[in-house]
Image (cartoon, rainbow, N blue to C red; front, side, top):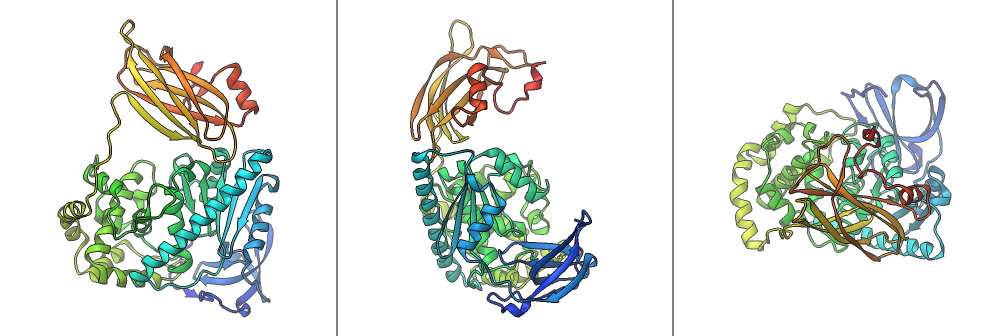
Length: 497
């Protein structure tokens, strides 16, 4: 769809609980030349586009020029959680989708394949666990929002969370929803879409719930505080979400407390490519794979500083953001000027105060430094596995010898794994572990990293990385691994030629 340039905007029916009289039937021609008929509320409109809000909470943004007809209609009333679950079954493969609903949430699990009876029981328990977690997020967020005097309102639609067991399914869904803009799908662990109003997450990320919590805060903000499609600075979005991040199901931290991980990262940022003034001025650094990680650290730092040192102005700033209208554009110079006007200082002045304030806060809160991993030992969590690898130099050959252990961290089924350890010289060794039970462990017997990746010289090395793949037991992929282990994950098979 062509860019929407909306300068003069009228927000229509954005009050939650607005009556059915706000619904219309829209007939328009899509980009493929097909005529579409949609029953929706006119959420917002401007010079170039209409934002149409449907009964399931999803939104379509269409150019005004392609709308051929608009007629008054009844409804659509927001769907119930049970009705929303049926929408998901129509959108995805119903045979692979499992759902759980409560009065506020719809939790869905898209499996990678059929489940046996034990797998069905585990899947049901997992969905209930995610539902309890989201209820806890709602409670903790509400408490913080009220303390900070956010302009809270009730959500209108059930909050949808979709968990993807398969990375391929997640990557495909991500690309469909982002259009390839921003971070590449393989670098995204989960996301909330203001257009669908859905939260999508990899099953792997439900091991610690840190990423689901981060994305759930976005979903809370855009259903209870901000208007979707309004011009909210990305630094604020990511700052408040990182402020809630924790490790584990218990949500025991909030933006007014120091998040130890981000605090230590902020003290040891490897570059100075992203400054606070940059992220306040525009969102560019959040959009690419290279600077995004540093931008998130800076966003946490700036947001924490405002919450703890400028509480009154912070509350006023959130209220100003909440009043912004959907599709509205905000020039960069206006963003910077409004920030300085509300906080009474330029962002550069606040940035200069941050190191001292953080140091005092870390001492007061007794924030412990991250624990160092012993030399030669690595711990890797990915692809539904936890892998411990111990490496030591082989005295005779000068090559590295690897050994370790793998644990299946899938909450629902046995898994088959391919584990490879790749050294800095291009040598590697690998293991295939077939049908490892849920929570089961298996040793990785000692091996010399003697295989050589195509295009590398091999030889002695002092560093290594762990690469993990997972597959369903008995699948074509698992059988292929058993016959002939592949190159390590992340390396193109074509390099062998």
